[in-house]
Amino acid sequence: MCGMVWLLAAIGCSMSKPPLQSQSPSKIGYVETSKLMAGFSVAQNAREEFVTKQKEWDHHYKLLQESLAEANELMKAQYDSVSKAGKAALRDTIRKRNLAVQQYSEQVKSLAVEEEKQLMTPVIVDVQDFMTMWGKQHGYSLILGTIPGNILHADSSLNLTAQVLADLNARYSSGTPNKQNP
Image (tube, rainbow, N blue to C red; front, side):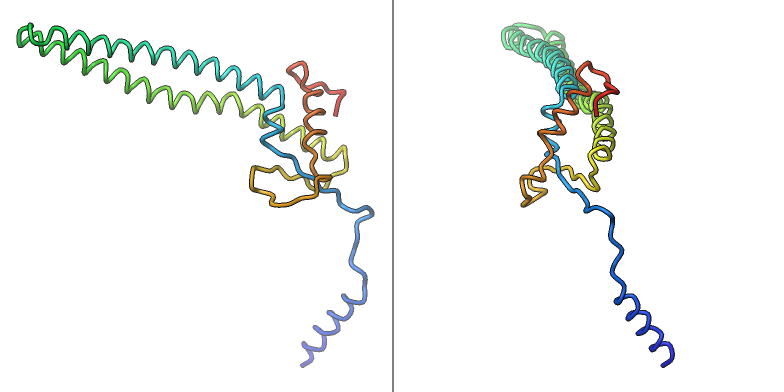
C-alpha cells in the first residue's frame, strides 16, 4: 500500500509539471530520394560512366553471340558432308562458343553489380554527408528520404527536394565539394 501511494504521488507530481519543451518547434521535411539522385549531377555522371561500360559489355556479348550464330550456320552447311571427326569438331565448337556466351553473361552480371556499387557508394556517402550538414544548417530535426509509396500523404510544404537538389548541385558543381556553399 505504501508503494502504491508513492507511485500515485509520483504520477501526480509529474502531471502537475508541464512537459519539457524545446525552445523552438522541430522542423521536419522530406526529400524524394529518386528525384534527388536523378537530378544530382555527380550521380548522373556515375550513371553515364556505368552506361558507357554497359555498352562496352553489350558489344562484347553481341560479338560472342554472332560468333555462336556463325558456328551454327557453318555446322548446318557442313554437317552432312564432313566425317565423324569433323562433325565432332563442329559440335565441340558450338559447345565451346555456347559456354563462352553463358560464362560472359554471368561475369557481366556480377561485374555490373560490383561496378554500380563502386560508382554509386561514394555518391550516396556524399549525399548522406551533405544532408547531415544541410539539415543542421537549416535547423531541421528530421529529414526523411522517400521511395515511391513510402509516404502516403504529406503536406507539399514539407518537400525539400528542389531546394536540397539545387544546393547539392551547387556544392558539387565542379565534381568536388565546394566548401563555401551549404
